[in-house]
Image (tube, rainbow, N blue to C red):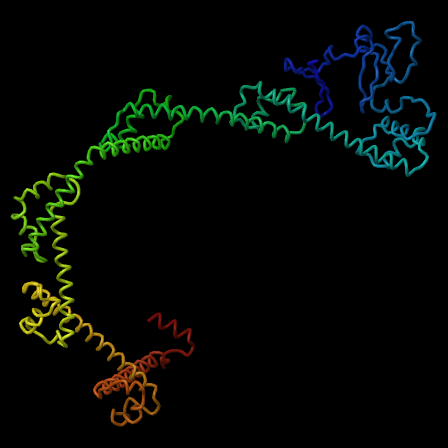
Length: 544
């Protein structure tokens, strides 16, 4: 049966058709019971009182009864006793019941049901409501009645909870179906807007009072729509990336040229007639990523091809460099290339050689000038080594290089020593000159260190004199010598000249310090022309 019965938060009943998705306030004939159908041709109609108890109402006479009016469909049946005709809530309370004929817990429970006792009742409320009913005393023990009441309330709460959950599940299915039927609701829709517009008059929406639950279902529905939307967008984006890759292949881009630059390629892409539709889901960053991947593939292909075609050229270039290097080494051995030779001096000699011409034919790798510089640098390293060897030879012979002025003074020694005998006189003279320069630098540095150490020792003695008792800046050196000659700082200086210099420095610094202290004292002394209040003195001083 497609029709189902539901109720709004205020208790009003409505009906929903699962097949047609229609809602109705009127009960469909398909839901009529056999007795209701039998009453269609009579003035009697079936209704439900508060609490769910069914009663029948005669719309012609205004009579209300609790029992089905059999005589309405069977005229020969004895007429049902007339009862109270009012259908108000208060009248139902006083409809007569049969007296209790037996005592039992179920009778007491039935009394609670007839009294419309719900979980909001307290025990005093129950006593006040049905305490005068005969069924109330069907259980003689007050404690048992109280216990039955608690059990009854607990069962009502459980039933209520189950009903709420069942209503929620039922509403979920109907509400989600309703949302699917509203094409206006998209993945970006908001509940607050939809509740005020598309769903404001929808019977299914207004039939359920829990707005938080409705909001939750709405968000769940919209979230699913967004997932579907994102999935579609992702599929479309993948397709557009494939289209872009195909377009870049059609451009036939040559790497390492202007047409392979990002600005150039991007300008071509955005100027495509169908750019806006064809690549609608691609950002500039997406396009850049595809472009970089494409260029990297082209560059890898180019390097592979270049490697295959240039391997033979690289081998030939290596041979040409080797042959030209042999020429340079020969010139070095002939002392044509030395540590002092410039390229402009050697160029006229090598430029006409076939090895030079062959090497210049290759635009990659080391050039003839690079190889020449390597040879000159090697010669300079050899001279440096020879310089250090001369140092060692002269040191072994107990000769102080700093005291030798001429090369001739040591030429015979260097020519006879096995470590230097194989070098030419020109190389030995140049290396000797470099050795002299190095010796001079070493001596100069040693002198600087000696002077610095001497001055430091003088300063240490000056400070020691200042801390020695009985020494005054007005004394002379000879009068205080006996007081300071046992100081470690005094003994560390081997010259009386340095010791006197330290004493004079002590006198000068002490006298200068005294002058500065006296000057500061005079400046800070109060003036007789100023008031005694220091704040007043400060104020007048600033005003001046």
